[in-house]
Image 1 (cartoon, rainbow, N blue to C red):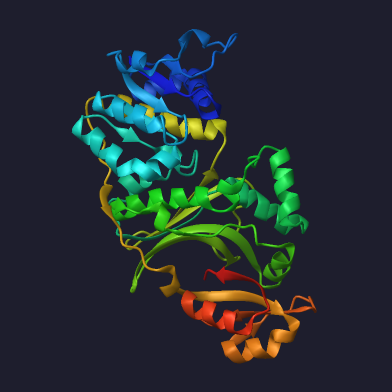
Image 2 (image 1 turned 135 degrees about the vertical axis):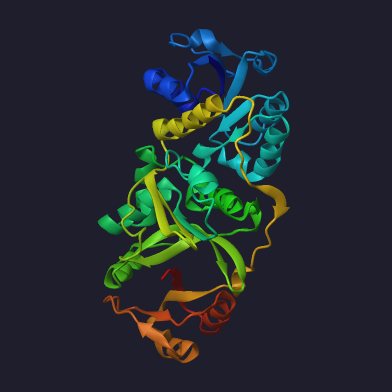
Length: 401
């Protein structure tokens, strides 16, 4: 029997308990042993809850209990999650987590601690909720030289952009609706400014490179400047606007970024709508592969955490290899990366824009007070200099493919 402790009895933590209890028979069969929730750590009491007798308030009770071999950290944030996780690993107890913030900040350190103490630090649920992506990167694609990962990694922003596209609504109105439906937090900055997706692509990029990609060095831009007019143009161009998190190796170096992009209907991520997420991976032998599903939510995320518990149960006293070293990857300056841009400027700037950018493709969507066009391929630095020289810019969105 594997004795499990759950740290944090919020949305994901309660989901972990629910998944284990609901699917007990099939989970125990796949684990090769019985999983039992022995403790639930939380500051609160839960009178009337079916598992109220398992709730404790002192982490040391869990740490000092030799029967507990697997800990699920679903608290979120850095502390005390980091302190508890570190102490657990030093005691030889495996830790399974959904905490992207902790993994992005301390992933390589905690993986190394697990290795040194013959246990595991697993984090399938930290990226993409219930979408299996960490295991494919660690195991299924080990024969590949991966050179690109592109993903829609935040369900809130994808829901907002989908509603803007389908209903012709503005960002502020859709955000308010998303908050009312529970798809967006009351303080939505982590989602709409791209910070959540940034941490997730940092984790995936670190696994792809086997070294640490520092999320603080990743260029990050959110969706707050996207308007309904942008979707009018996108429709005319047979494209869609998506918040993409990507990391790619080029002949000039390796870059990572989060930003809105216009993608064509032929792109694999074009039809990823609503709260769904998807990750698109390219390897030199396999080519393209894609992983799609619900990227958030109580039970999808909890299901991924429980899959990590099962992995720990199958490998008692053994470390499941994960290649992510502390050495940091040197990222290209985003100013040196090259791409095309969709640009909207005031109508009176048409001739000047055409002269400055020289080779452009006009996009006419019937909006008479402005001029829109697509640039040739150029560096971000070159684009910024050109657009600054003419002024009158309304918006710009990068193009992918």
